[in-house]
Length: 326
Image (cartoon, rainbow, N blue to C red; front, side, top):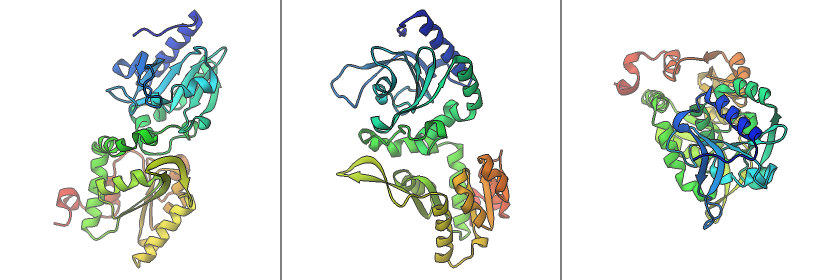
């Protein structure tokens, strides 16, 4: 469907934005201009229309929507952005005059925030600087699994709206059913077959971590807890919050419970909030990690898969995966 245009200048800006995002992978069926979608937050109302919607994979729907592009339509600013919450995109770009606004879409309307205002050249530079985070596959994982980079923190992640909480397991199963998930399951299975205790410690939420623990075979999971009232998610995080020091405390507590020293433990992380935990372990690994962690950890894996962690511990190929424990 052809998008509407408020003015020739808006038409030119929209095309320029789409072309810029095409350069990092949003092309073909991943781009819908003049996209109609159901507003599940207002049942019985007509479908909504956004000028362009970009997706991480097909089919295009709430779970795969990543970026929306909207022009003023009698509404602008926060009101315009919140009118598109049901699109499911963590980022909505507002075409304004004279600048382009980058908005993160809040779990609640009062959490929606404008993160940046750019002219077109600066927008192109911003996209280029964040290509790895914004590319369709990686951004889709960020949206569905973990807290994202600073420019989308607080955004509307799939599964957290109460109307969609029953889709969490289905979404994760699709995302973990690839090679990365297979390597993670292989890592856990191999280590457990040789007597190791495997724990998942994440700053994400127990709604996800419990499923991931079962899916990948971990012995234990530690994560933040979302408040649930009358069987519905409220969007609030219960205290205590699992932060950098809490992750380290989890490692030390598990070591004490297992009657081992931290020097006998392996800790793996990818973000700055894993730093204290990784530095406390005998083998601390930065896995495809942010620069702060990668520069401090004793070991770093930048290009390999999780099998590297097994070889680092001394496992032979004959002891990995299907051969584990044999």
